[in-house]
Each structure stands twice: as C-alpha cells, then as structure tokens.
Length: 221
Image 1 (cartoon, one colour):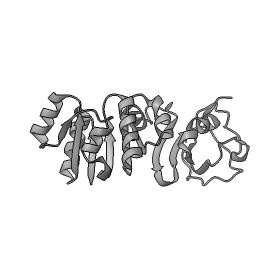
Image 2 (tube, rainbow, N blue to C red):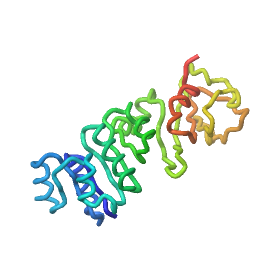
Image 3 (cartoon, rainbow, N blue to C red):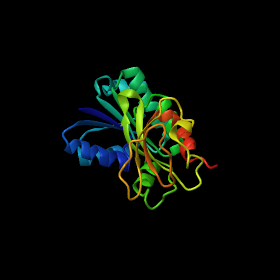
Image 4 (cartoon, helix red, strand yellow):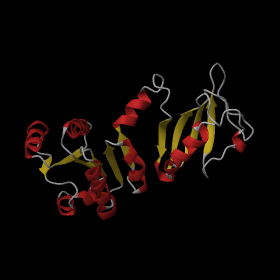
C-alpha cells in the first residue's frame, strides 16, 4: 500500500518506521526541516518538507494514488484539513486523523474522516476497570455502514435502572445486542429485558448519536 503520513514528529516517525518494516510504501510530509532531515537520514529518503494541508503539495507527492492518508500532527485543525483534502480532492479511500482534544471527535466524523484516534480515549478505554466512570468504550467501527459497536456500563442511580428496554427512549437505529452481568451468563436482550445497575451493555449505534445513547442509559434520575 502507498501510505502518506502527515506529521513527522515522534508519532509520525515511529508510525512510518513500523509501516516501512511491514513492507508498505511510505511518504512523510513534515513542516520542520530538522525533523525531515532526521527521518531521511534514519528511514531513507521518504520525507518531504511542506504543509500537508496544501493541495498543490499533496498533488505533487501523488496523493491521487495513495491508499491511505494518516494525519498525526499536533494540531487537530491541520489533521482535519489534510484528511478532508485527501478524501474529497484526491479520493483517497481511507483517511485517519489523530485528535488531541476528544471533543473534536464527533466533528471529525461528521466531516467524513474515516477513523479518528484520540489518545485520551484510548488510554481511558484501557483502564476502564480502574476508572469505572468512563462512560463508553468503543469496541469496533463498522465503517461501510457508518455504525459503531460500543460498551456502556450502567452506574448506580442511572435513570435506566429498573426500566424495560422498550420503555427507554433510544435514538433511532440503536440496537442493544448483549448484556453482561456479574456472576451470570450474558443476556441477549429483548424489549422486556430490565436494565440493572452494573450491567455492561454492548450496543450498535450511530457514532453521531453517542451522546444521546449515553444519556439514555447512564443519565441520572
């Protein structure tokens, strides 16, 4: 695969190194000449100095034939623009953006970025057992359907506790697929299944409706 990495800092450097080791063709776009020099010296002549948001530069490096563009600069705005230009101007099949501020995740998805990576959310999801207040764990993205599989843990005092699923106001298209309960076998829910505190609910949702799903399941009474 031909993969363009926008941003040659630490994340971009090690990502490019790993991709090269897997046999991919990689090109890095980096604004800093110093970073470019390091990459070219240590990984080969794969780095071009410039702005990954500029259409002319993206055209020059052959973005039209790229299989993927990954934007990992430290600026959310630059990452968004690079991915949008690649997607809409050069028809790159897959765009991935690093996000520093988790609040930007929904915006990026609304604007057509295929995959967003928030280091904050990744860390929280890895320590969910230690930090049980983290509301939603993202399990899998069904990209071709625009859906996502998530896990939601129901806290004590949530308004949904004691209610049947049919009586909870979920966003259209939300599907509860599994309920995991302590010391019990997992339950495939029906409309009459009653939500209990500490339930771990696996659901298929529209990512743009995540806040509404979270409110329906975890909102306090």
